[in-house]
Image 1 (tube, one colour):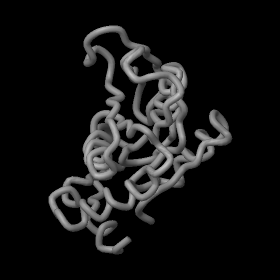
Image 2: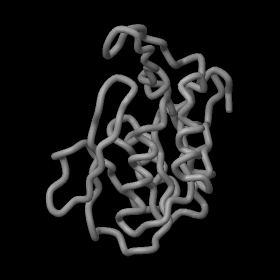
Image 3: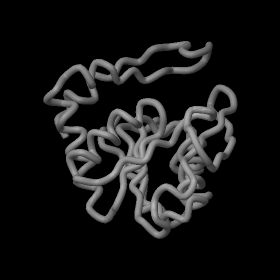
Length: 174
């Protein structure tokens, strides 16, 4: 991957609260060539998947594009209260609070393989919750793919502890 992609990510200190270093990917998204390269790199990792799941909100951006590029269905993993109909939910701890994620129940046929996509691997809580939801929906997570990782926050270890056999990939090196 072109190193200039990583250079397009801005560090925003103290957002959304003091002590948090936010990784702003909007400059990367605004560059059509780099955005397409990142989506293609994720798509190249989706060969074993039947569906691409994206974690709200920034994971949606990549996952929807990858689903289109790879001719696969898209599964939204949403924040609580955003999906109509029957859902499966799980709550988890964030780096700066607590949240709940949901997925539609009984929408995708059981046993289908799912690649889970998000923008940043930080503490791993969101990724573990998303993986738990995919499994609770009787689907098979094939791997987790992130645009980038903040290694100091230990997310990779947390995911491996919760889901030891799951592959974890990052597209950009910090």
